[in-house]
Image (cartoon, rainbow, N blue to C red; front, top):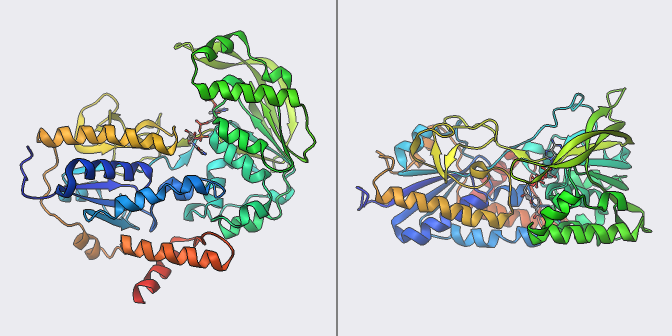
Length: 464
Ligand code: NAP
């Protein structure tokens, strides 16, 4: 049993997205009122990608915050919003105040294609677009030239590509009543995109979208999902691979084949799913994207037998007005926290932080969510993932392998440093304010686009 038996066990969780809440929940379940969890976020608002990533027309998914609200209602929970690790507080400060630290800061950046001219006007990271339409303060400055877009390419066919395609193919009216950012809705009202071309480098059997997500696009009014019979067809390797692939992949293949049979359709909006193609050249002689050269691929078995794309000598030129890269998120280094640059994650052994990949365990430091395993999986994936890390934490607590804090409340230190800490009741007041301001505008929620504006309203609400 750990040495400090009479003191509550103190845990700092850095990040306030799904994996942070699931780790907190697992700690409360295991240790009851014997644990205090302080959750930190650099933003004044919680919920990570549920607020800033899940698309505004997916309110059913955003509804998961009800679960997080219940977790936050535990008397052992405190929120430290607007507190950034590496700026307002250092890892050494946390080690001075907590028995254990859990990193749950996700993957904040995007993968690059590595092609020349990736910085042309009209070439965007899907992650920026997602943050922008969701009112994330980091992304308010982006400009998306949707008024000049008729044909848009999206590289990658994961669920982020689906979200971007769906938003681009939706009418502004469909999005208007949601919690979409006001600045985004104004631009989307002029959106001219009528054709979205999805560039998947592998075949339909390996498509990264979930069946529900692609099916939802086919259900949009006046919209067809179009696939050519040639690209819908499976190669022998994929046929064989599909037999033992997850059911979702089989459902995707069935859907793609049905769409190929339907042909072009009558709708004025099209999602063209291309398979076994990847961009090799971005063109835009006057600094603005005007086209993309794509190269065809064939699939070959990788070391583990999984079909991998291999370029063949066949090219096509597509005229496109805009291109979104939806090829995944990437984790950034956080000061004082070990970082594995290639994978963009915190090196770890089943959730225990390591000094470097394969290196020694860093006592008392743990990781959950995307910064543990990389940017994969649905929101629910983070629950078992966080529980697995908490198992390690509990074992280390029992084994007396933990930090030796000398102080018990970080609040005074942050106060001394002049940090404006947003606590949970501040957030609850802002939450109510956002919903009321939204209702006045015919929306579910009105999000303030900058941290400064959020803090101003929080100050005002404190004064009432
Ligand atoms: P993802 O699912 O990993 O998809 C990335 C896509 O980019 C894949 O099609 C991948 O192809 C392709 N790609 C990667 N590198 C490429 C390159 N250099 N050139 C061309 N294509 C490339 O990632 P994501 O869409 O960012 O989503 C992240 C996670 O969040 C996923 O688990 C997703 O399911 C989840 N999510 C869920 C929802 C939802 O449920 N509604 C919404 C958004 C996100 P390969 O497969 O060949 O690597």
